[in-house]
Image (tube, rainbow, N blue to C red; front, side):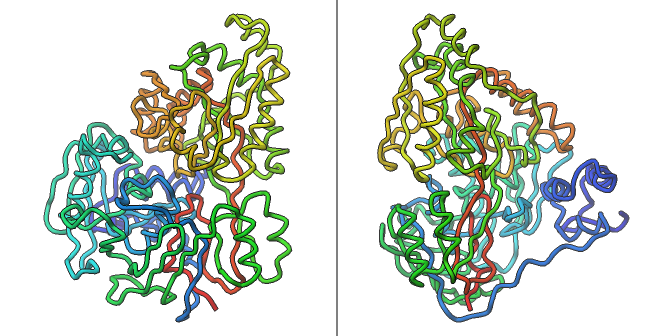
Length: 538
């Protein structure tokens, strides 16, 4: 390994040689190795060289001067850091860019930051920015832009989920125009991946001074410029001259809002009126397979439904009631009948078996008799009446899953009423209803979603869960680089969530979308983060 260095020319982190040795011996797989050393600032080509193999080149996009028509919601938006919908981020990411990129293989790559290097204790992170990057208004992109964004994310008055995600940042230190240091209060191994969250695009340093409404003043560093933004109807982006990177393959992208009925989206694809669909649900699968001029794309992702209970609300303040619901549930049956078995059964702790920081635990089994005993001990010998609120925010399969839970629980005397409300209404109360079904999108690491959703005071802690032992185990996991060593801390965090019976998390569904057979270079991304500058059409 003599001679190999980081992107910025600095020596490799001391953990890298040991990780490479583990990969060569087969103790960790290639993808886990690439993910881990990417955190440490080692680029993919150098990482592959450590293993004696060559990096795979991405599929080239077709060169064309045409436009791509993408079916996607065009939502009201002003401040991208306050975005709560991935669809909105997929529009602004044509013009706004991120410090890092997590690709479709969950490997972190340089973006506006050309390199980064953590200290041995993972509490000090030094970044170098690309030089020669220009904003669309002609200004140079510098560390001052990054300082503006990070400081507003962690401001105590910030309304962004970034405030809690990046609460570990104690100080931003500018080195020069293209270098800065982040000082953390505790070790965090996943900082580069967290910087690609959809709420983390880098805005111009005068964003607030110039109105704080991005669609009205769409300054960006990206390959496209926004030329039209009509909420609930359409948005249009045009290729931007003078972009710092490779020019986009197409001249124009049109985003077309066709409402929430995915069957309508499929009909438009069949008629040749659009080229790419944002998603296809299990309900449209057979229809898409029959289309002669379209391709079905699929992939594995750590996205899921969580039927969570709030332990600070009655009757869920009694742990035995929560445990009874979990004991009565049959996740395998939910996957089979609500999603045709196309996925992986969940384990009620919101970490997927294919996430690199997953720790296997003993399999939980359904036990209706145990559920009845727990209810009786909790003072409900004749059963209990509960209400589960949901909004079918991703499609009817949410309600199908809830109905199977309803049937499962009825056998234990748990009578669940389903309160199905419009999707928009659900998102206004999703973190307030005592028993709710919520869709959670993919995160590259389990620690990222646990930190966001179950840490005390977490930005999106809809369950209101608060447990010091869990927070401590999560802190330990986030401070460990070695995947095997991290498993012990993750096992503790997962076991606490299971024991506290915070949720029924039934399965990890396969992800689907569809494109015209004229589209080239478009891949399913587990997070639905689509970089359209790499996509072409013939």
